[in-house]
Length: 417
Image 1 (tube, helix red, strand yellow):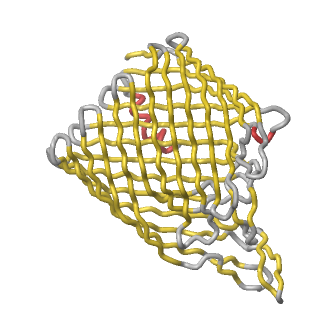
Image 2 (cartoon, one colour):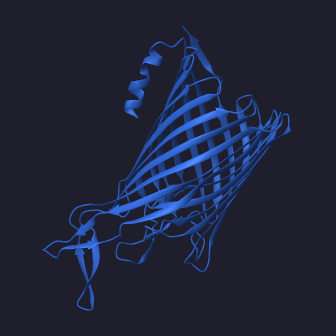
Image 3 (cartoon, one colour):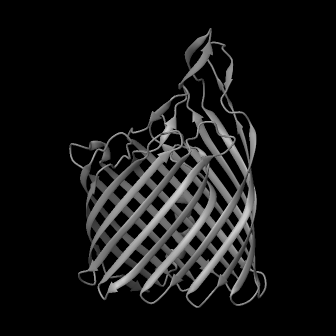
C-alpha cells in the first residue's frame, strides 16, 4: 500500500480537481446461525456501523481515488467473539496516453475474522476452527494496456497478495498471478483474445514449534517441529476468449483453457536428531479454466449471470479448484424504490497435490429493497440465506439473517485549481 501511494502521489500533486464524498451506514442484524454450525444454531442480534470517505484527484487524463473505511461490529456480551473494529483501505489510479493506459490498484485490510471453515489439524484429525483471530491482508495490482494497431491490443497485469494471521493455527500465504493477453477486434461487436496465465502460491503449512504426531513403536509420538515448513504451488495455463455485444445493452463473454499446477513441499524437521517427516508428496495436477458471463444494462434494470472455474486459496490457506455460478438483478420498482436479488454458489475441490483440503459446497441468496428518503439518506431491508456442506459430513449447515439499515451518502465536495 505504501509503494502504491508513493507511485501515485505525483498524480495528486498535479491534479486539477480534488474531491471528497463521505458515507456512513448503520444496520441492525439478526442471524439465527452466524457461524454456520451443523449441530445447532446460535442466534445473534447486533449492530454493524460503517464510515468511509471517497477521496479523488483528477486532471483529465489521470485519475486517483483513495477510500479509507472503518467497520464496527457490536453483538453484546452474549457474543463477544463476533465483536470487532475493522479497517479497510483501497487505492486506484489510472493515467493514459494516446495509445497506452497504465493502472494501479491496491487494497489493505486489518480485520478480525472467525472462520466458518472446517480444517484438518497437523495431527491428522478434523477440527472446527472458531477461534477469533486478527488477519492482515495486502494486495497490489499494476496493469498496462497498449493499442498495437487499429484492431489489436496488448494487456499485462500482475497481482501480489499477502495474508498474515496474527494467531496460531491458521496458514499464512502469498499468492502471485500474472496475465499476458492479446485482443483482436473482429468487428465493432466481436472481439477474440488469448491469455497466458502464471501463478505462484506460497503457503506456510507448519510453524516452528507446532506439535506433530509421528508414528513410533506401534503408537504415536508428539514432537515439536523445528522451523517453518512451506509448500509452493506453481501454475501455468492458457486461455482463449470470445466477447460479443449482442445488442446495444446486452454483452456476453466466454473464455476457456487449461492449467497445469505443480506442488513442492519442504519436509518437517524434527528435534533431537529424529530426522524429518514428508507432509506432502510432490505432484502435478491438470485442470481447466473457464469464464462465462452475460450482462445487460437497461434504463430501469440491470442483470448479470456468470460461471467460472478458477484456482483460489481458501481462508484456511489451501489452494483449491473452485466452480462458481452467480447471478444478480437490480430493478427500479418506483421513483424512490429499488429491489435487489443476488445468488452465489460454488463447489471447492482440492487439487490432487493437496492432502489436507476439505471439499465443500456453499450457496448464498440475498434479497433486499431500498427506499431513498432524501437525496442523501436511504433506508434498506435485506434477507440473506446461507448453506454449507462438506463432502465428509452427513449434514449441512444453514443460516437465515435479516438486516435493517439506514445509510447516508453526502454530496460530492470538489475544489478545482
